[in-house]
Length: 429
Picture 1 (cartoon, helix red, strand yellow):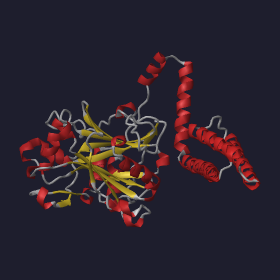
Picture 2 (picture 1 turned 45 degrees about the horizontal axis):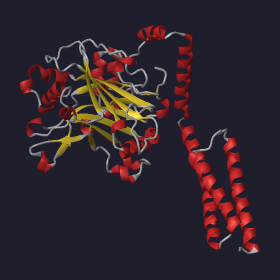
Picture 3 (picture 1 turned 135 degrees about the horizontal axis):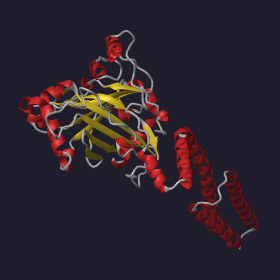
Picture 4 (picture 1 turned 120 degrees about the vertical axis):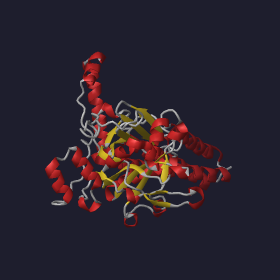
């Protein structure tokens, strides 16, 4: 039978277990949690039963086993509380956007209670759409620069202004927080022949085949599945109304990227969206590309490959999967981004299963759903979100060339994003 000293220790252990449960319950109540998690209930049940078993039997072996269980339980309580605080901190960091979206949902639900579904459909039809570029400002030109003087003459939204922005050197455009402008195509080293498979040679890209018209940045409980759900398709005299001479090549390309707004899970992919940052970019064919399309036989390999992609990507998944995206952080060494990420800076990624091609009358819409990417890619991208406002980020797109006659590769289009602030994403568009 157990000694008097062992029995006293058993009683103390039992009281310690009870005290741990009491503290835990008080903290649960203070946080307005009405129910314990299943794991907590199981652990509580096991701990209390083991403690009672010790009191009854009191063997040395069981005594140490109980000591282990109670220590484990106390540790669990501490970790639960620490984890709650950490989660709360993360939630507070992003509570601005989530609160706005929650408020928006509540407003919609209240409206649903007050009006019929038919009335909501009518309202949807009459929803006022905005012009692309309304949710994210384009960076302004340097004062009195050649670009600035040009814009004063022709107007900021004209075809001439669009072409002038595309041709302007980087130094003629201001670096303004949370703004964008067309990227410099030469920043991206792309494949060149001959025999790329053996030589692995790359060189700076020639000028992009498309000029950037606009970029937008939205956050919602669901992704923007069709750009026309929120935006008007632009009509630019002299650009969007010009025939390309090829029915399968419209004058505009919309690339809509979905970034996860919630921390990715290793166990499941929420491919339908959930909380999502939607980043639609609208591109128009450059003046040089339009000129080359007048005679496709003499066009550059890049223009010919673009023509093939526009013709085949809709029905051929393998050809559609040649679409590549690249991200390049400027002066990455001076940022606080972990060193292991530096090696991936500027590396291309094929968009295969995550890409959706949709043909419209006057444009092609290509959607990149990052939720389909591998967990580590999604996790890494989500982890970078809080750092976006600290650096300048260049995004580029191209079609992968695989044969000598398709090279050199050339940039389709791109965007230079300056100090993007995730908290400024539009939620009420």
